[in-house]
Image (cartoon, rainbow, N blue to C red; front, side):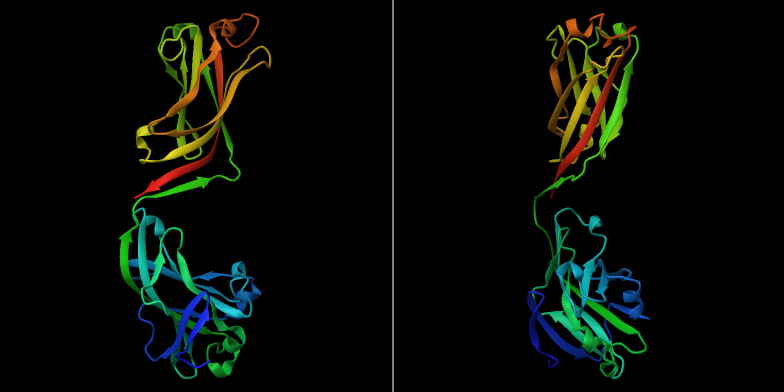
Length: 317
């Protein structure tokens, strides 16, 4: 392949050329390169470097990117670091060049994307580069100078073309294996709160959020003859606008004499505007105060919450 050719690879055109000038922004010197393969290191990530006001890293796959089923080639990528520090919905367009030093002739092989407008980096696409950066046989041939004495030198230049906010973006993150969190609330001297409008448990954590159990001894809205039992966010005002949390939860009034616990189970989306959900008519007073059951025993009521977070929606921008 002639230097300066434009080739089709990695699903986009790649320009190969040479440069006597070293890369302007970062140089990565790897000594004892073969040890990466020896120790089954499939991906090496460099330290951070700054260019165009952002932080970046070089990533090298010594035997090709296995996740993309690349074999017989060296894969090299540019990765944007510290994306969490970017404003929500922010995008960065950048052109970049990745270098490999020919140590025999003191010149650099240079690969760059032929797209002049640059590649778009954002939270969902942090990495661009070259799946087939160089054939491993070509790389390992000492006459080419790329790998000498088991040492090689890579480099990078990054030029930011454009930055912009892409407006509002909604991201739904579902949890594959949700963990259930339990919290037990013991109410002593229940008869002292029987005329109160609402009682709340201590705050407890489930997932990354804080919750409370909320009990209305005479029903929420004074419906009478019922107990209302809800699960509520402890501090809904702290939620970012547009955030919704999918919680599967069970609320139980424990039978302290038997195992005939009284419970309800549901899944709801919680948000700043809908921060409390459950059962308005959870249990009648007649059932709750039955003396042959232990739902209220020696003026003590025990309530258990079991909460699993299955997903969360976040709005950016």
